[in-house]
Length: 224
DNA sequence: TCTTGATCATTC
DNA sequence: GAATGATCAAGA
Image 1 (spheres, rainbow, N blue to C red):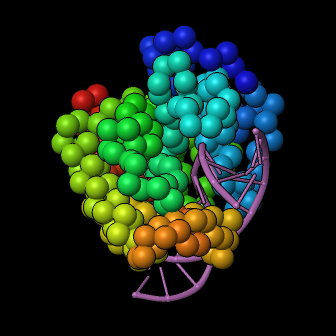
Image 2 (cartoon, chains in turn red, green, brown):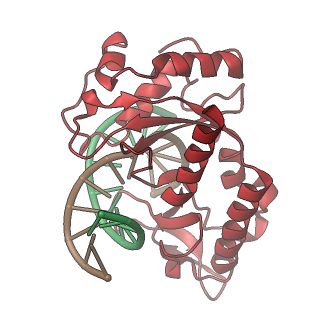
Image 3 (cartoon, rainbow, N blue to C red):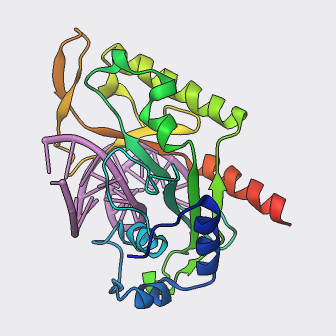
């Protein structure tokens, strides 16, 4: 674990210094073992970069860099720079949706300031051979926040009405909701149609690839 | 090929 | 069991 950066500038400079390294090179410096496949190590890339950048450890419900208010997200991209996967944001709070407003929502807090680190990872490239890309510190533009908020408000309306179980990954233009649990049979308490709590499948918010693709593309346009 | 729904590891 | 870090894999 590296010392935690004292300022956003220091964090970004450190992240820039990692660009061009393979994950194996980075892991070697940190004396971390490289898995042959990510199938049983799905969060490995994210934790590797957290470690390399000195994210102050897992205080629940706080950004990765708590003092800076910055969240770290690795983003697998293909050779053309397009994200290969959606981006996990946070779990959906299903139990007491009436108390939640956008301004104080976990989604808005998580996405207020995000350091995206693209990782070039075409299908078939082993984890150790994947390349760290140039970091991008992102804060939503008013237009982007409006898109996120519109989707979030729509999801929340459905959840408050007791139909969280009926939300699918097709709902939401940029912010989708998908199942998120240890198993498909996992259950948490959530509001049902009658207004009472019932056991439903846990879910989480994800950013669609199209949304993160535009963020990445915008930074590319600025840097050329 | 792309997305959706499912799954894996770790920590608390 | 819940939250955080994500990617897998089957079906559309």
